[in-house]
Image 1: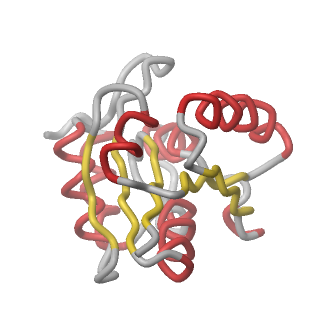
Image 2 (image 1 turned 180 degrees about the vertical axis):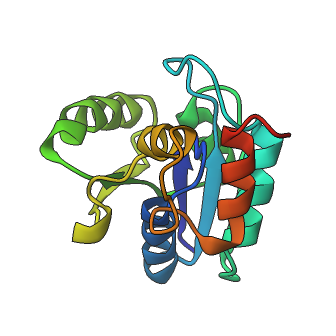
Length: 161
């Protein structure tokens, strides 16, 4: 059974994230959506626990599970026996950073490959940061995030808990 990990901060989850996760689930036997904190981001809109709950509302593939880890991605991948880390690429600018990460991960865990999936054209501009900015300024995010969680995101951007 081949297991892949789709890591990210998912703050909040977008339709681009869902697309990459679902396509990964079509390729691998088991997929772990790994919610991680991102130390380079100033503040989070949602807690890790809230992000996990939002992902649960959006994903319904039987071979997808959601987990969290606070440490090196490759340590989690080793523990789980994952054969691949799957990352979505939106633009060439994503590749430089992701390529460096892939080389580092490969040196730390040679048995695991990094697989890049290109974003679909309609999702190439999507990022959690962009969703948060549009939402906080009162814009319509309904075509950027799953309908099942859009209201929660709107409320949080307005400062409601």
